[in-house]
Length: 261
Image (cartoon, rainbow, N blue to C red; front, side, top):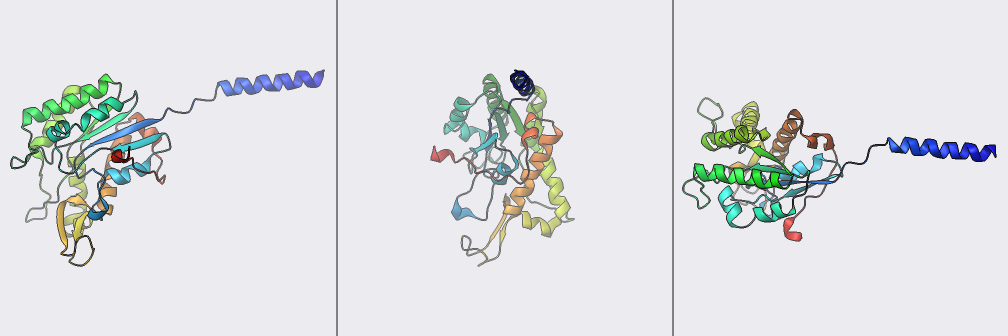
């Protein structure tokens, strides 16, 4: 009789303890929308690397990073090619959308050119439609290009469109990762010559994908992509986004390929 009482008491104690065990966090997706500086690269482009590729390796098993960024896209072409709507349709409560455009929006000679007023309107559309589905948008200024003046000082290459992103973030109370400023500081730290290590700079014959060599001041090497991803992660922590609680350095995860769905 006593043993049955003790067993029942132990079972009740266990149930009481289990009642206080916190539930596992719900699984979420982090969507990345933007341009070639963020996108997943084809094998033929290697060692060119978008910062969204190493970004996937910093999160625990509750997070899936779904990188929808595409080479050459602006806010205008991302919408016109129906790349945004599938993201909006799939959003669930608690998902994040990281939005980084400007590189291709700002160039008047490109078909991707987006006038300033349209750029602002497009950004606000991404924000409002994300929030309408209870997602969490995050705005990013366009990452810096490698451009130094004669004195070795990094030059601003996104002044107008980066400021538009900052203004939209202020007006809409949206978390902002100022990747333009952060990456400029990193390039200045590396300096004129060493900053080439962060970009897709290759000597002739160094890599079979670029037999004639490459001097690219926009797109990253594997090292550069990782360092840019680290800047983004540092600001996720600084902004105290809920996503920061799910960062686990050293965890390797596979990037979702939207074409494989």
